[in-house]
Length: 115
Length: 114
Image (cartoon, rainbow over all chains, first blue to last red; front, side, top):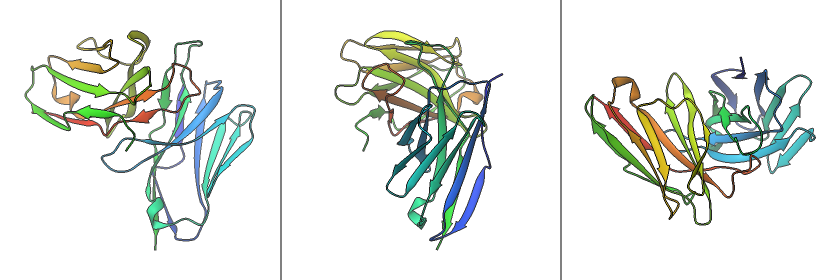
């Protein structure tokens, strides 16, 4: 069956360091992958989308890689700040093509950046 | 602020009851998605509507139904409520139905079934 796994439920790092979050998937052939940030009690907020033919994408302090051979995406936050503390979710387009659009989310990784 | 509104913010009800959650998408967005988020299951896709028509279905129970109206707002109806239906329910919207669109999430409705 199809599965999305985010490497750990929680990750703690020191301010200024680079946070690296992992998203692994099985039995998918996604055309793209999305990353969202979610703060407690609030809706997810879109951060980045990377397509299967893109190896890497950057936005300010964020960097996402996508390795379709390893079936893995890495999400990096450089020069991390306490304000980056949140849950980060990866999401893949589900099965079915065309207009049968369904986004499947991983359970997320709770990142805590300590001052 | 994503531009997606959801009402009510909180809802407390009893088992066996029926409730309706309401969502207004961002201006110009034609697609609406409903998700359920509980602590153990994470964010689960329920159903998608595009311009009034159902487009994709996830793990939505038969006790749940949804619709999208001509003005593009959407309602999620939950009936014969059980304790396990307690969760955060999110609505999201996107410009079109295509998968490359980012989704904009509303603030959610927290449902508590007692």
